[in-house]
Length: 287
Image (cartoon, rainbow, N blue to C red; front, side, top):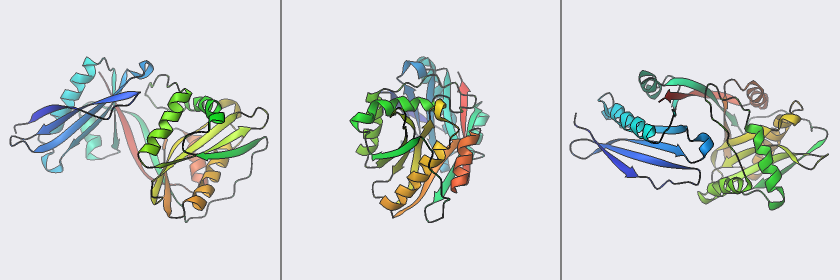
């Protein structure tokens, strides 16, 4: 089969990353597949790059995916990438393709869903803390303490993947929220504040579709190490569920994904009624 690859200029440029793209076409010029390589702009994570590869179902097992992957690997090496990352549903054809081409399992993500019309258990308040919430970009007076609280994700389980440091500053915190807003979705955040210091000790984020319908997606949830063991994550997520039911009555469910070795967070989700829906392998290829 004659396959022609065309490098493309991808407009999806972000302050912290950029993408390279390829389009695969047959002898008649019909598109049959595509590949994207997202390069990290942050020096601490420049050794990692993310792969997305798609081949039209009718054209699979004809070498299209292998040709696209070869182009991606060559480009990654040219940009001094050390490890390629790619997500695939566990046991799927995509997962088997990656395994065949030498990708190992770096970690496994367990996906779960909470139906909002199901009952959830009552969760007691945590003494010494109080909860606050906001929508969209964090208020100015909370911007620094909220950014500081993001370091609570630094030691989250990451399997065999060496992610490197992922520094946040106030500018990045605000930018991440604006991106969600600009694409038409709604970001809601619940945070736990330490009564003794007035600083944020933990937070949980949820992104709701712009029309308030369908399923919402959990983003980050973290508690700073000094404040763990009190049940803050459970309390914050329970409050978020309660607020979501009130403010988004047409929403069906909440979605979350958790590294399979993150036992405390998986236990929290199970307690609140989240039901597993599947697993994704985040595979790695060392270059």
